[in-house]
Image (cartoon, rainbow, N blue to C red):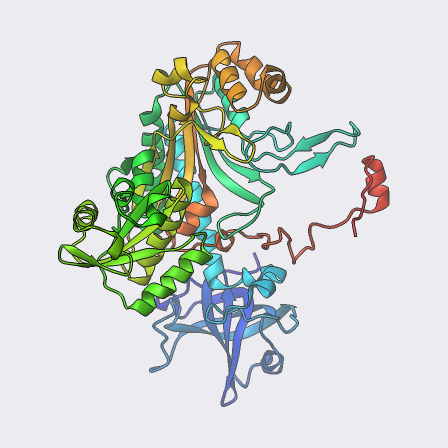
Length: 578
């Protein structure tokens, strides 16, 4: 080894001993002819000292930030008044007797300093420098700890870690596939997996009753803070289980990860909420339960008013806000709602048993009284949105989250987990005028709906469950369909008749004919979990080499063009559009 110690482990107990350290020059200071250097590695920093009589003094005087060096010397206590209590190694320094310059560095295009954060473009282009920052080193370490905690817990529950293939058949799973051309089979393509869904189900058919994998998933979709083209799932599947069995395992795993990475204790049991209740109270299936502000459906009451906007809308919903606001603040919210997909925002101030606003002239005293009773408002502002059911919920859920932040209603450091269960099985696609699976088509409908699937698909609920933390969906799962005939019926409803289903999913359906066990599972966004647990919205902060918003890597220049000779080998031709 080129070193005997790391830069983060030396303390007073080591005084008088000799040490050899390796690392990067973090900073250099010349104090009256004595050179002080903070030497950094991923474990921390140690102050090293070159005295004027050192034979390496001149070389040390030429050292610059990010030079890589090896030094040897004697560990000494710092002088009185020179102790740095903010550093674990702050009570000692190393008087250097040997210096070996391992590599010189150009002037870095960014500071290796948590207090001076470069812009995204620079951070992405010089990711290897950005990753040297202590905060990034800690995030990657926390990701490692979380991964090991997941494995540790699942191993203790008799799960087997099994890898599934990365080159697979293209199957529709909600997003566009990344595809890989086959040189050996010209004109044919592999797809990169959006998830291991079909393969983990086949593992259940294969008799591996408890599988897991930290699976790499790839999806060609528009990016945002919590999405990347490639990401990691903690993917698991279990045979001979019911819904609660899966929930219990996932809860135990999450609590173990939380404790290992944050030291915090999670709730004994996570809350459980039906999908319909979540949509009714919060307008979303990803409710943030760290604050109140529950919505109220006032459609029937509002239609008894003379306000035409309310009378002519599919849904009228109200968000009661206990805080009073100025007219200027309300006007800003109205504009914000319009910028975020809403047609407008009506409002009324609660004064005793009456409402005050320009719209209240359309409300009888009876309507006002019923609105106040329905919303349980004692004071503050009632905000109304009238639109289609889908848009009303979408706008008010965004407004609720905004008010929670703006009014500082969110409990700090709180972790509010909630299971959302009993989702609808299908959702109507207005553009294509067809039924789509609400999650995916391999989900088991509740038994009471098996006989009426085709007749009333809008009423079918399924054994579907999402786990939400502080308003962020961490992952989802379901009990799967294991009966071939039932699977074919579901596929037919969502536009995959038998022939098409055989073409796309024949290998899965074929496996079910040889004794598929009842099974279910869950997949959790691992990068997202790491980020949310540490109060960060951008998952790139927990990825070593992420892509930018254009799905590009400024560091290595991907994606890039292939040379004509490489395209010829693959029997491909690229047409460049102007």
